[in-house]
Image (tube, rainbow, N blue to C red; front, side):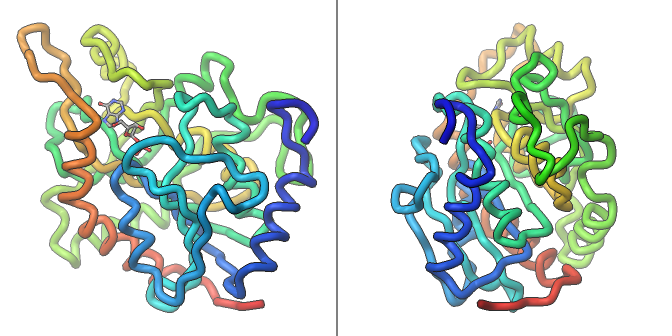
Length: 291
Ligand SMILES: O=P(O)(O)O[C@@H]1C[C@H](O)[C@@H](CO)O1
Ligand code: HPA
């Protein structure tokens, strides 16, 4: 590594080479599991799994509800790699550490990134347990200059000035909506804009009102950096937010959000989310290969 925050191509390559030497799986799809949604990884067949602590160069997960394991395996015959636990800026990781796995995935041959997260509802019609297909995001830390692409650009991954329009793949969003229709999930399906904030505190009422006015439907503390880096290096992206709580926007409302409540709702819906993601992966037009 160069400096504390700067990670060079060789660092990603070393981790990718180590993983390739430890597993026969050659995933084309990577899945990042949000808070309380790690059960998705348990559905993988023919698993090879690695604790983050044992993977050279990998950051460590410190949040309850994020197991800290990288799991390779098959979902309905499609080879995937699944992060059972992600990294957040509020844990003290630099954004290059937060997004480190995404570039490693690229070097493993991953072409599609599926991200999930737990998020609070800003949109008035949303209910706890709703699943929101992410149409777009507002990367608030990014707008304020906290961007994983800061620093020298690595042209081997992507351009200096990447576009951010159309990042959440339209075909995958359509496919997910069709799947939800056929599985009778439409009554709790939403599609909207996810806003990333830095956390770890939940939003004040004035902040919640501000984010809602900005056009955000849901708010969370992750996802945008990983999506940005995936898109920068040419991956297709699909994202789901599980709505775990209402974000208080009214001064008369005395409800208070907490992480345990977030994990509770995640647990309640994780099987549904698993079904949706499994079905989506099974319909991706990819061919498996192994080492
Ligand atoms: O990893 P995600 O974005 O799912 O986690 C959300 C945001 C915070 O880490 C935590 C708050 O409860 O859940
Ligand atoms: O209300 C929230 N705000 C921010 N992040 C979150 N993650 C789950 N719920 C929330």
